[in-house]
Length: 107
Image 1 (tube, helix red, strand yellow):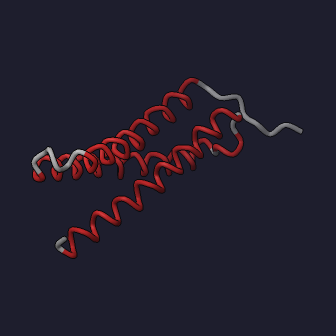
Image 2: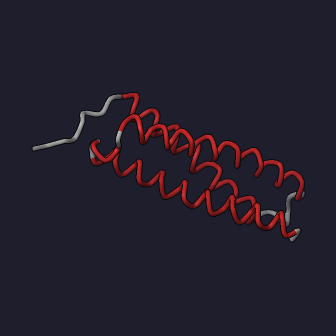
């Protein structure tokens, strides 16, 4: 018996927007840290804070997506995209925790 649900366009669109919200801050923050010696620290810091807020909202929407669409029952492509976004969310959460720890330690 096949329990996979037929995906709709809304599921693809939501997953794409969530992926953009998760991976854009991860990639941008990595590039900002790599180029931080050339940029002004305050500019990079404020951009990272704004991207962190975007990241938190994307993670919240990923959780809502999980409860609404049950991605473990979707097609293989949607399931792969979902788990790729979960991986990005995990990387982002670790990055946010490390950044907050660095700020609180004053280094």
